[in-house]
Length: 97
Image (tube, rainbow, N blue to C red; front, side, top):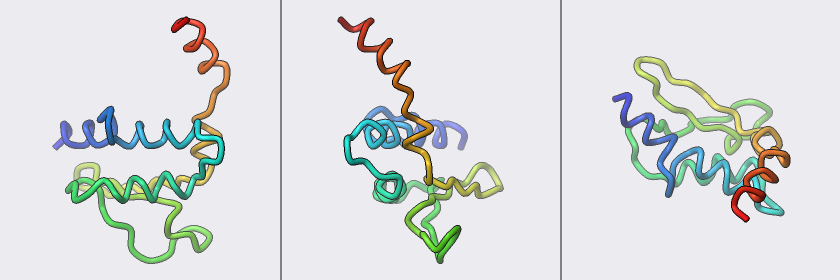
């Protein structure tokens, strides 16, 4: 089970971290698109479909992951801003050149 959760987050092609990163550096990216894209990952048993309206009436602003016996709600509001760190991005660009 832990391996599936790790893969859900770390898969380079379509994992949660990959989705967050790609949306964070798109010029007109949106926090709501992060959760929308995560919901399109398919039928992963560790990814719980969101039901109802949570936090501020935005059902699209969260996703739920089953961690063992507990479901954890991740709110995507502010994810882009928190994930964007221009200093780190500049270092990566510098090391790639």
